[in-house]
Image 1 (cartoon, rainbow, N blue to C red):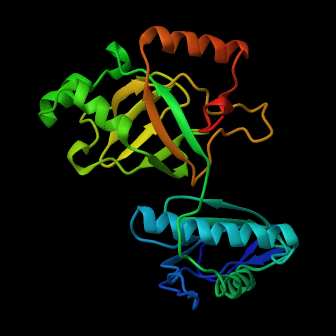
Image 2: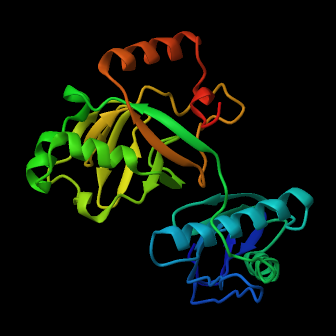
Length: 280
């Protein structure tokens, strides 16, 4: 029923739920940084979210990645019996578990012991992507408005955006959608006052100090600066999402003709999405 420590009845079995615990600290004492669980949020009786940072950014991504890797490894080798999977977000990890095999309180105790030995001393090393992006015409639907607001020429905004090596903090909102940071402060803008009901698939958009690529047609309130032809999610692949948290992306400006050619070749299988990995 509620995250208050009472038991939930499922007809035949009962599963205990641990109460929310703000400020539970799990510290690593190696050279790395302190891992601190800011809040424990039970999600009914089959999942629990551990918030590890209060702010999005490079430090949060390091902490989340270190905790995620340690928990995932423990699941693989059987050190967290009953835990089915772990999912990472900007500032948290969520563990999904079988409440008939492990209680939340037991799970939290095991995770505390696991994370005591985790070192958080560097950003995880992911893959590096060089993605084509067409900033021309309607592909960069908001560049004119951004140019006026920022006091920068359209071409200067494009050049500065393409110069950033973005870090993928998390995937979410839509299947395969990467949240990228960090945009330079002088390019940061709040979200649009009026969100669009239709953002084309492949749109590259910015808001605040972040950037996203929309894998699908979707509503959205971010400022569209370009379009990428590379498909980011394919359910037929062994790993459907092209990207992973910890990867980096740099956009390479291309003309409309080049964009169209790449889109055709990707659709026909003449080239594969992984060919845009740096060094491929």
